Each structure stands twice: as C-alpha cells, then as structure tokens.
Picture 1 (cartoon, rainbow, N blue to C red):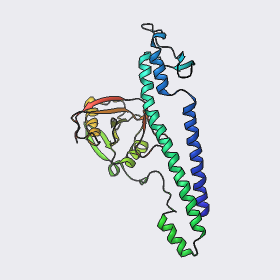
Picture 2: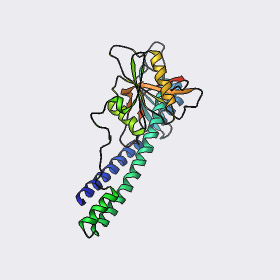
Picture 3: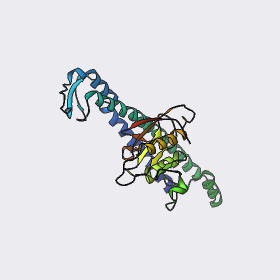
Picture 4: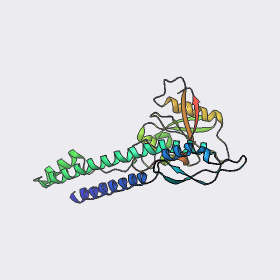
Length: 271
C-alpha cells in the first residue's frame, strides 16, 4: 500500500511539474488574443493585393513589448479573417489555461491526501484495521479514464437517432460525452454542440464518399440544442466541425474539449 501511495505521489508531482511547464510556455510568447489585437491594429500596414494570397508571415509592431513580432498567417484568408481566427483560438486558450490551473490545484490536494494516508497507515495496529481503512477510503481504487466495457456497443452507451439513413449519436452526460468523442467518433464524423453552454456531444457518423446532407445536419443540431441548457431557447446557435478539429488537452474536466475550427448553425431546439 505504501509503495502504491508513493507511486501516486510521484505521478501527482510530475503532473504538477508538467502543468507548470505548460503555463510557462503560454506566458513566454504572445497570446492568441494579443496577436489578434496586433493584427487588427496594423491592418493598414499589411499590403493586400486583389487576387493574390496573403503572406505566410508578417512582421508587425508589438505594442505590448515595444518590439517587432512575426505573426503567422493563413495564406487563403485576409489579414482580418486571420485576426478573427486568433480571437477564436484565444477563447479556447483561456479555457485550457483555466483547466491547467484547476489541474494543478487538484493534484496539490491529492498530494496532501496521500501524505495524510501514509501517516494514518503507519499508526494502524492490525491487518483487520488496515483492511477496514483501505475500504473506507477506497485507496485501492484506481480505475481507468473510461469505465465502459470494451464490448459495449454504441446502442448500449449512447442515445441514437437515425435520420435519412444517417446515424446520430448523443452523449448522456459529461463522462459519456468524453467516451463518445474520444473513442467512438472518427475524424471524418461531424461533431456538434450547443454553443457556450453545457450539453451533450452529438456525432453524425460519416458515410464514405458522401457529403452530410443539410437536413441531417439541421436535425442533429436540433438534438444538440435540445440536449443542452439552451433547450428552452426559441433559437439556439450550435457549433459543428469535423471530429478531427476537436481535441482534449490533458487536464480538461470531463466533457470539456477544445474546438480548433467551427461553423455555426441556428436551429430551434427539438427532441
């Protein structure tokens, strides 16, 4: 038991160190929001030639640090659209930083608990008392990230709706959302979620060689809106994106993801 607790202690300490390094990495360079602001402030300095692509990089004045800065651009977008992209990234960046901080605090509490368990175990006088203590505090429980059986089918795990021959999967709760998005959705599937509120992850399964019909997307969006805190809204914005643009950085809470690229469809919530 002490060896197990020591192992968990080292793991928690290494996770704190990794999280701190990620925070330092974010602080060392310009943030996405800062780069967006710099781009917007210097639009007049970026030469746009009609019919030509944007440059891959531009050097602009960084008024935050009083020095030049190189900013990478997507060549198929205008400088203003590139700035909008950096603003979208900044929103995800803030979410990620908040959860890194929460992860550090959670691991610090875990370290305190482990040290208290080690002190308590040293005072336990008998095997019987030790077994009681271990059971009472659930010390031996160290399950995996997902509790679902490998043999479980999507029909057993998620809500399923079939529309015009397409299968739509709907998560049941935060943990189930992670299971759906991380293990049962593939990069070609279409992922949907009600914007800016908690709710179910919704996935339309891809059919080889076919584009997702607009009517199927709208139906899935209605379901995403219905299975969210926007259920009672008269009109709900729902984000959608191929699953390949949805990622879950280490440290995010259950059900939380970062979306790299998105489109928005407005629908009436419908179950």
